[in-house]
Length: 77
Length: 239
Image 1 (cartoon, each protein chain N blue to C red):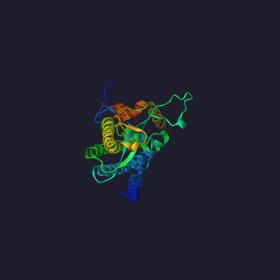
Image 2 (cartoon, one colour):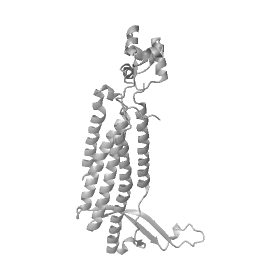
Image 3 (tube, rainbow over the protein chains, first blue to last red):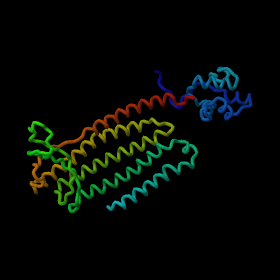
Image 4 (tube, rainbow over the protein chains, first blue to last red):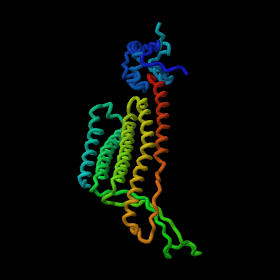
């Protein structure tokens, strides 16, 4: 098993939640209501502080924002 | 200490614990959403700590004051050589001898210094063990509703509590038992006829082993907490 990363470790993954919400005119609170994920967790995801994401969360967000996984998560270069 | 004064102190402590532990945190919205039961348990444990500490101090003081009456359990064994006829359940009538063993609570005055010291030591150790366990339960209850319930400190506390219970539980009983034996010797040397027709047999040093078992169980639970800590670390940042 790989050692768990510390809190300070960068994952190298950027979440484009902010941009996608802006394009669709949605707020984080509204998205939270739509996908049933807490505002705290969505905030963690939006600010690139998430270290892992459930497939169910990913699917719910993509369905709510009508996007693909690749539109939401990108590798930072 | 008068019982009514003690009850008043307990009532005041309960009141303070309810106000501090239950009502005050409601001002904060995050705290108010936390389950009520663990907070109540923690508050009750802290009240228990105060009551046990007070009782222990009183008990130790009473044991050490030479002029005060003390109550202690003495393991008395009675050898009944002639079984009363109405107690005979044996149809053959061959039952002629029986031994009755039971701890007997005695309140005595003028107990020897050695017995008093052992009694005080037993009371102090048992009180310290109870206080330690109550503090650990209080910590456990508060920790269970925190954002990170599994911490290295909690597992260390459990190990300490387990060792304290195992060692303190046994030594406390041994100290009390020695005090009882010394009191037994002093009492029946003074009045060997005190038991009427029965013959007082000197008690042997006995103690329950449950503190050892429960102490080891706490150390095992500490291992489970460490496993929980690893799982908690792995799921940190999961959304």
